[in-house]
Image (cartoon, rainbow, N blue to C red):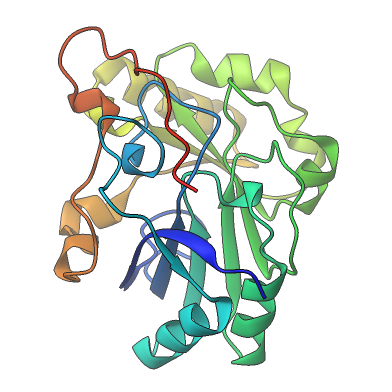
Length: 234
């Protein structure tokens, strides 16, 4: 059983998507080769945000901690968690009757049995076919008013019979052009498209657990926002 590089663990609630509002234990893993320019979890890969020490935890220890929290679901996220072999972690969580939810860009094969897969595609690493078929919901990050139509052209989103959430990129969550684009798209097209939002950030829900690290967002960096070279945290 191989230990995994862990950026943070904390107990909060799911602030997005179909399972909005459920008590959730989050396991955020280190490492991401995708490097989105607006990343809000840059501490998992960005050289200016990486912590001094990367903890490695055994899957059984992570599962025990999740179980003790009393959560309804466990969310494995990142970074990009699918770059790691999640088989043992998923097994240990399911062995404790904890539903396992994965948040992934879908560009890498999923190793491990998941109960729910949220696929949030990224332009820097488009999803592979097998992950598209495993998705239970899609989450599109809308960083400008044209992003929805671009994604609709790039991916056959209507083929998979699951919700497609449209989330304004958080640093532009009040941008009227982006919000209007989402409004119009949902009203004119309906299912499978749904308007989404990161509701937990309004509540500062994650920060209520002292184990949660402060948000490391590239949108808060000075200058042009372009990231420096990545460091391997593993």
